[in-house]
Image (cartoon, rainbow over all chains, first blue to last red; front, side):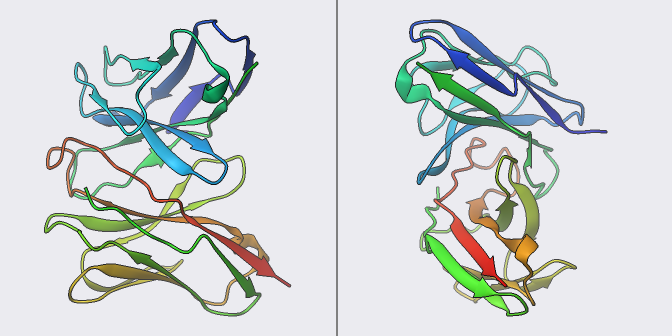
Length: 113
Length: 114
C-alpha cells in the first residue's frame, strides 16, 4: 500500500542520547515535512524539504536536523535529546502538482527521560 | 504565511450538522484552504480543499466568502465516528510559491455525543 512509513513507532530515549527518526515514502512526492504534536499545541513544523537536496527550517527547528539525500527518505535527527523533545512526531509529504494535499504517516511517539 | 484561528473545541450530537469556522485574515492571493481530520494515534488526513465560494464532496462542504478571510467546514449529520480534531490549513498552491512552509493552527476538537 502506497504511503508514508515512519520508524520506530515509539521510543523511550535517555536525555543526551542521539536519535534518528526515519521517514520513507513511496509516492515519489517532491516535498516532505516533519511536524511535532504536543497536547494543546497542535501541529508545529520542524523542518521541511521542497525537493531532494534542499531543506528549510520550520517553526521549531532548534535541536533538530534533517537531510534529504533522495526523494523517498527524510530522516529527522535529535543530536542530543532533551526532555522537552518528548512528543509525537509526524512525517508528511505532498506532490508538487497544483494544490496537492499533505499525506501523513502514523507518527513516532518519543519519550525523552 | 497566513495564520489561522479556530475554536479550540466544539460539542455536538449525532445527526446534527456541525459547522467549524476558521479565520485567516491575511490569506494571500495564491493560498488555498485545506481541511484535515485527525483521529487519536493517527496522522491527519485530507478532507476537503477550496479557493473560493463552495466546495462539496462525499464527506463535507466548504464555504468560503468572497473576501476569503474565513472559511467554514460543514459536516452533515455527524456520527460518533466524526469525533476528531479538525485542522484548517492555509497554504500556497504549489510548493514553489512560498518555500514550502505549511503552518497549522491549533485545530478544533469535535466531540460527538449520542
